[in-house]
Length: 88
Length: 138
Image (cartoon, rainbow over all chains, first blue to last red; front, top):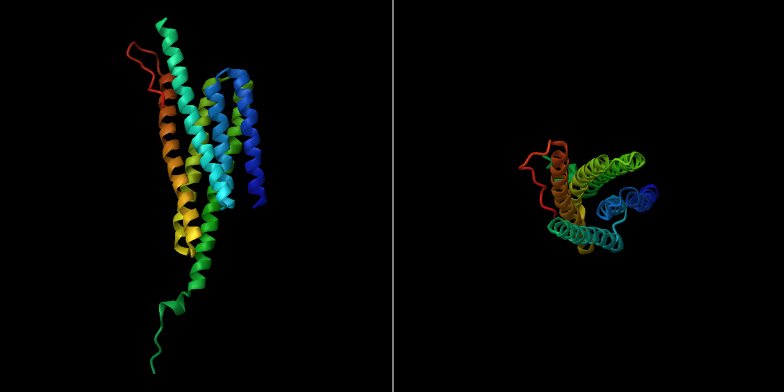
């Protein structure tokens, strides 16, 4: 049980590190954010399989909701910026 | 004198409960192992793609991570379905419903993203023609 919880923490930390590295290397915030949130979701799902508390459920729901809202809003922002750049 | 044999004698409730509990743990462990392997493989491949500065490989790795997550979720949903058979309290059933909802919603979104990302990768691989268009962003 503790091994899975430890692994989920490791995936969370790896998500932050890879997200920052992707932002630094590729200069694409949306891609970096998506990668980071994908690994957060993997961590949340792992934790949910061993920890059936309301806190774990709320944490996973928050990660998924934040992921959906942020990626959708950033994608629409970048699309609008690209369209403006093409129009001008 | 004839002796009647009831189903409860062959398979008492505690034996059924233990059996289902064992199966739930096994299936849930399979899901956790799949997610863990997928995340480890993805982290290694992300590091390789970062060192090569290859953005296409980076997107392909995201796709493979999403596929592992979907497979792990399928196992975990199967375990949830089994668990409903032995959930005695309303509190446990509530938690189970919440978790099953999370997993189902996530499964739906991940499948949609996989299809979208796959289309983007195929579009990037295909030679650009005059009719080629990017898929709409979601």
